[in-house]
Amino acid sequence: MYGAALIVVLAIAGGVIAYAGDRIGMKVGRKRLSIFGLRPKYTSMIITVVTGVVIAGCSILLLSLASENVRKALFQIREIQEALLTTQNDLEAKRVEADTLSRRVGEITGEYEELQSRFDEANRELERVSDERARAVGELARVQTRLSESEGRLRGVEARYKAAADDLDIANAQLKSAQAEEAKLEQEKAALQASVSALSLTRDQLTAEVADLQRKVDDIRLNAAMALAEAAQSSQTSMIGRVIFRADEVVLGRVIDASQPVESIDGQVRAFLLEANDIAARRGAGPASGPLRDDGDPSAIRFDLTNASAAFAKIMESRDKVVLRAVSPVNTWYGGVLLVSLHVFPEKRIFEGGQVVASREIDGSEGIDKVQEGLLGLMEDVNSALLAAGMPSDEEGKIGTILTVTEFALAITSVLGMKGPVMVQAAAECDIWRIAGPLSLRLVINPA
Image (tube, rainbow, N blue to C red; front, side, top):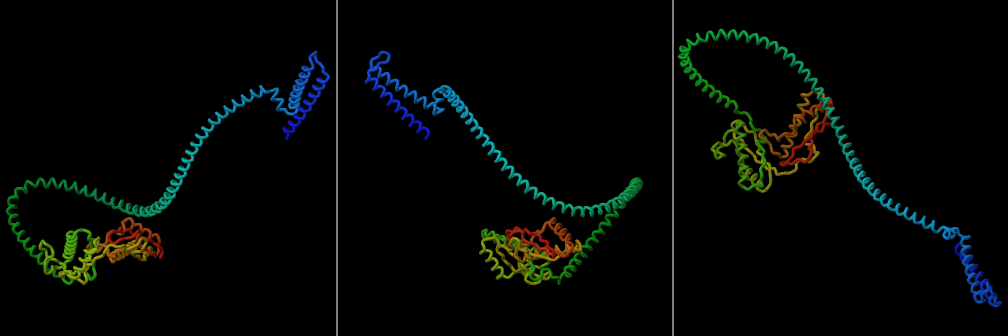
């Protein structure tokens, strides 16, 4: 608004001055006035020029009075230009500095991102170390518990060591006595060596006597052999009447790979029957009516052909691994033939992870012998449960290693530490399969 008003004022002032100059020029022209002796025509032109100069001067004067920026532009333009140039140079320098700072900021940003990445990695490492520390603390607690148990066992060992030290003192005393006896024997040895020469003189006479005695010994040996044969026959006779296989007792269980060719399956079944026959013979079962093996040895087992045919057909149909089991269906007496019933169990999951296989209540306050007896009974229950589920077994009816010695010892320690009745459960750590396994069990001990 200020600039527009100034322009309007300048226009009005210029118009007024131009009008005044025109009127002056007209009057000078009419009156034919002369300035400096000039002709009226030139005098009018001079007045017109002077009027224009006055208009310009008034305009500049009015602008200078009205605006400080105009005064600076009119009278300080060179200083302004120099200042502007200096400012431009400074601006260019600032731009260069700004570019340098921008690059520096980029570098710092990269370094910051790298440091941030290292910081994140350090945080992850700290978390991992914290987790490891927590696990180490837990492991330390378990180690301390085991250390306490070990200290108790160590005290027992120290007591036994003290007793052994006492025994060692006694042994040392006996050793000194033996050394004295050895010295005495050395003296006797010297005396005996002196008498060896004398005894050598009688050797020829004794040689003849030895030959005679040898003949007598041969006669005695013959009589002893006959006596031993009679005793063995008598012992065998005394064994008659003893049960060597009870009803429903598992004789043997083995894995048969039915995915193999027929010849291989037949060989596996034959090897199984031969092994069952050997077990029966070692137990005291008598031979059957005919041989089973090609080498002519008589067979001590007999089985029903219908049952055997059905078992073999089931093996052939499975096309996978199966458990072939020989079971004594009735009591078998010493010297009698073992009647065998064949059973086939296909592969399947028999226990799920976490499922209790067997359990038993044990009183930890009854002492280590009772606790050990209870845990052994629990292992027998587990073996029976796995056997009933169809797992393969050896000739003693055992499935395999159920617990290691360390696990069994830890279980005894835990039950004794409860100092009262507890329920001990044998649970499957993972799924247990009849053939593939694995047989992985853990003991869960809770107050009864």
